[in-house]
Amino acid sequence: MNPFEYVRAGSVQDAVSKSSQPGARFLAGGTNLLDLMKYGVESGSLLIDVSELPLDKVETLPHGGLRIGAAVKNSDLAQHPAVLRDYPMLSQALLNGASPQLRNMATTGGNLLQRTRCGYFYDVAFPCNKRQPGSGCPAFKGFNRMHAILGQSEQCIAVNPSDMSVALRALDAVINVQGPSGARQIPIAEFHRLPADHPETDTTLAPGELIVSVELTPSASSRHSSYLKIRDRQSYAFALVSVAAGLAKKGSSISEARIALGGVAHKPWRKEEAEQALIGKPATRENFEVAAGILLDGAVGYEHNRFKIELAKRAVARSLESLEGMV
Image 1 (cartoon, helix red, strand yellow):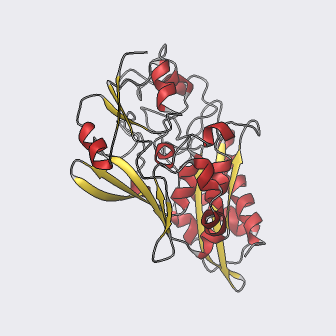
Image 2: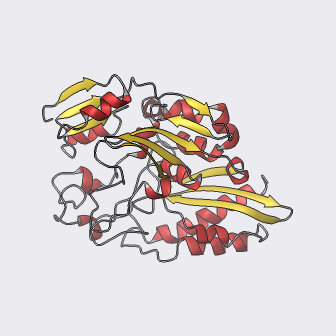
């Protein structure tokens, strides 16, 4: 490992101020960053420890939503009464996201910033456009079973690994950040990036910006929601395909639907057109399959992952079908 300095931030403003040093990185739970540094994938001349900042609270907002501090541990958030009651898909995503040991360390802010688990990204013996722009992407002709089928580019077909982010995308979360230019809010739809010509950039965070909290607003569909994760083994593993889905009805017709996919793209994947196709329709398998088709429109598979297209469609229909009896 390359040598680095370590400092502990005394406040959010102190952390942001220290981040102006070239090579500075924020450190919270360290469940991703430290691994990447050990492998030589990431480097940092200064690690700014933000784990002791007062960002570990879950607060109720005046409109009934939640403000989740960036330092809230995944295990605590998954078991929070308000999350269990109003956002079950988020609780289920967190509990499916990692081992108990990792959930006890991993934070809300860090989970949003997870980097891809593409094997070529992690192995510095291979070229990787995400690690070194312009070097190439061996996943196209290599082993690509876990890779993207939506939103990919000629530069990168890696996927976002976060389960929590998929649920937050379905819930229209808003991310509060503090940076050198002040505070701002980023809708989660605008937070993660597709690879395009710059796969090395995962998010729209500006240099030195620190995530301080995430805000959620409850809805009828968020209360009747679930998270389905399909993976190679039930124990700790990343998703082949995952679905965060919520459903609400008025009478016999669907009044609201939320659907987001994980394991299929460089960011959590959502198309509001798929949800709109369900509004006013009866909650039938046929209508769920139509919505799934819209959501997966344009999907492109490769040698080892073409199966994910049909798998994702079936997973969406299955998730919505399982919710139909709850509303």
